[in-house]
Amino acid sequence: MSILWLFISFIYLFYLHGACVIFILSIASLNFLLVKSFARRNCFPFLLWIFNIFFLIFNRVYEGYSFSIFGQHWAYLDNFRGTFRWHICFNFVILRMISFGYDYHWAQQGSHFDHEKHVQRCHVCKSGKLCYQIQQERNISENYTFAMYLCYLVYAPLYISGPIISFNAFASQLEVPQNNYLRRDVLWYGLRWIFSLLLMELMTHIFYYNAFAISGMWKLLSPLDVFIVGYGVLNFMWLKFFLIWRYFRLWSLICGIEAPENMPRCVNNCHNLETFWKNWHASFNKWLVRKLLSWAWLTCLFFIPEMVVKSAADSFQAESAFGGFLVRELRAFAGSITITCLMIANLVGYVIGPSGVNWLMSQFLTREGLPVLGGMFLTFYVGTKLMFQISDAKQRKQ
Image (cartoon, rainbow, N blue to C red; front, top):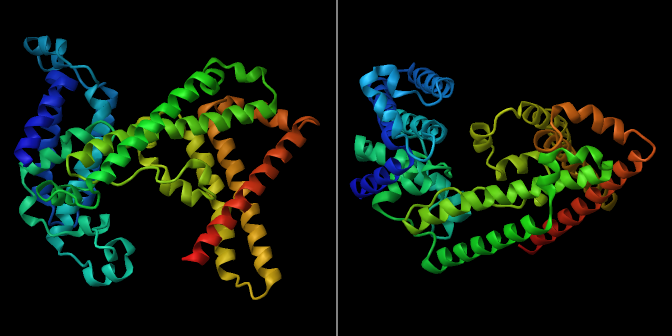
């Protein structure tokens, strides 16, 4: 099966990258030799990261290289570079190369995974299915071959944008296709994707959030309008990535490989940053999006008070009705702060940019802006409180 998928994937790869497949195979082969030669040594993780970071940087600096640098008699190959820049896709290939290296490294050291203890605690495994952690910890020592390795790196359904899957989980499903999703489940998954695509088309034709953000017209809007535009852009970004990742995951499911689900929850249903990061695949943004350092730093900065509040809440035990009420109100208050912080971080990242922060703050500190900010905060507070009440009610029923 690996040989068949390798053949299919290479046809796909040649269409995308043309002669640049030579660069992909060369770097991948060097990584395979590194893993096989040094996986049993303690210095292996360091060597693996240095090797992959080196090529990650050089691929970007030299823009995927040129065949002419190896001699003018190779320069004609630059006319056959395919339809898609190979070094952009290779960012995800690097993640897979690191995954293969670590899985092989840990296999040489011996697994300490307690299968029985995990099954007792995992609700997915109790239902008769195989969870992702079980697939990762499977013993597949016979599958660490060069053919399986290449098949994993260039597997067509997940090659361009993932979702990322570990080598062990991939190899264990390639020979024995997944059975967690029945045919009707896959069909329903596909129908939901079609409905989401129609929703995206509807949003594109009716709402003009991105037009305001890209054109710079947000500078002419009121503070309330800027917040609404930022909220719309955030939801549009969520739906865009939702469609991309769901499409490739659906393709993979049809072919028998279950990859981890990105964005299992809507962005509007994330009450804290921990939930946000667990449900929005942040690693893709790190590889795909540039010049958003201010967005990342703001998000990390806002994460610190949330950790302090959550630690204090966990240590507090409500022993009365008033105490329970107080805890619920504090949770809603903290949730509204988190959503407001996410709004500001994403306004900086996707709408106004770092240069617009001073303008935004000056607008909200005016007599007209403060009521708007208070109204937005109150809206988030009420919405978060309702979500927590619904969640608590579901837990009590279970």
